[in-house]
Image (cartoon, rainbow, N blue to C red; front, side, top):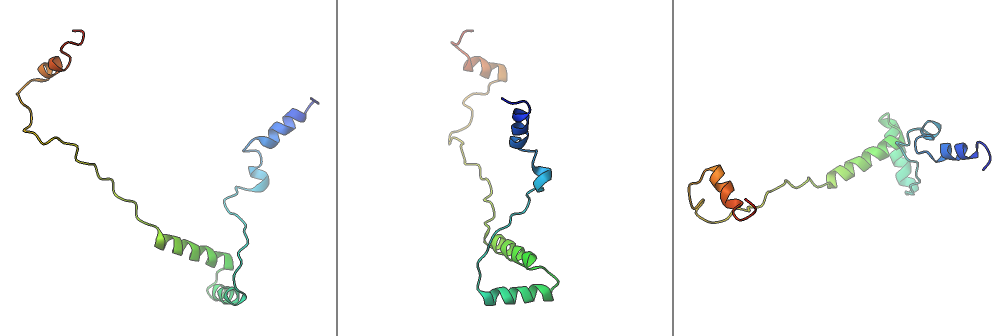
Length: 106
C-alpha cells in the first residue's frame, strides 16, 4: 500500500471526519410534489405571516403528526398475587431462610 493512502482512506471512512465539511446534518433536503395552486396559496400565506415556505411546511407537518400521535400507554403491573390466606405460620426471617434452604447443602 502506498504511503499515506491508508491514512487518507481511514480519514474518509471515520464517521466524525465529515461533520465539519458537510454540517451537522440535522436537516434534510427533499422534494415535495404539490398542486401549483396549493403552493401559491401556502407561499402567499407564509409571506403574509412573516414565515418562509419551509417554516410553514414544517409547522404543518409537526401539527399533523402531533395531532395523530397517541399518548403512551401507562404501565400497569399485572396482579401476580396468590389468592390464599397469607403466611401459613408466623416465622422469623432466619426460620424462613432455613426452610427455603432445607436439604440444599446445609
